[in-house]
Image (cartoon, rainbow, N blue to C red; front, top):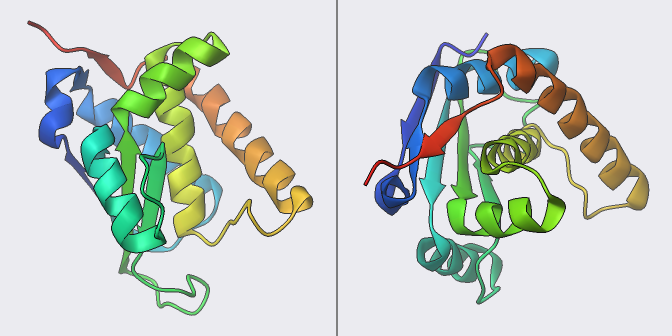
Length: 160
């Protein structure tokens, strides 16, 4: 079971107020559902500018993206239990635009992106085939159903 879920907001705190225990519970639900043997994972909520910088630096794509996952290892299956799994960077700006486009709440879209990033840390890769993309999408939807058990919210709009 993932004991430690570190959460960082950076500049995203201008837009959202994270409900840390709900984020931790959701992340743990995904990791437990995948039987991940990790003790710690990092979750960072970012904005477009930083997303673009990271995407350019690490993926060679000079544009923001909705989520980035940085596994500590290239082979999660080979790593021993009790490890730091890696970090997931969720872009709040992209999530807000996608939530509007998809007709869902910002909290739900952030949860989908968080699940997506965690699955990437565990070795899922939707870019290798349509079948893998379908499998990954199905897992995301399964975990989104668990979001309702947490009151359905991972965040609130930031208080101004």
